[in-house]
Image (cartoon, rainbow, N blue to C red; front, side, top):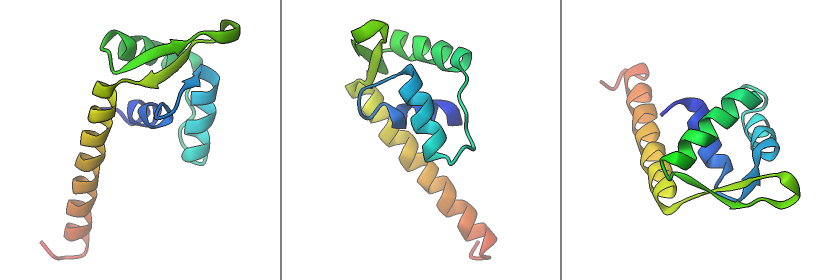
Length: 97
C-alpha cells in the first residue's frame, strides 16, 4: 500500500469529502504529504471500485466517503505491518540484530 493510500484510509475512519481528506492528511503529516485533487480522486475512484471505501452521502454536490468493513480490516493489517517494519528497523539500528 502506498503512503498516500494509507493516510487517505486513516482520514476516512470518519466520513469526509475530498477537500476534508486533503486537509486532514496534510495536518496529520504536518504538511509532509499534500494530496493533489487529481491524485486524490483517482485513488478514491479505485478504492470505491475495490469496495475499500464507500460513498455515504452527497450533500451540497460533495461526495462523502468512509471506510467499509473491508477497508477497516485492510487498514488494521497495514498498520500492524508498518509497526513490525518499524520494530525491525529499530532493532537493526540499535544493534540488537
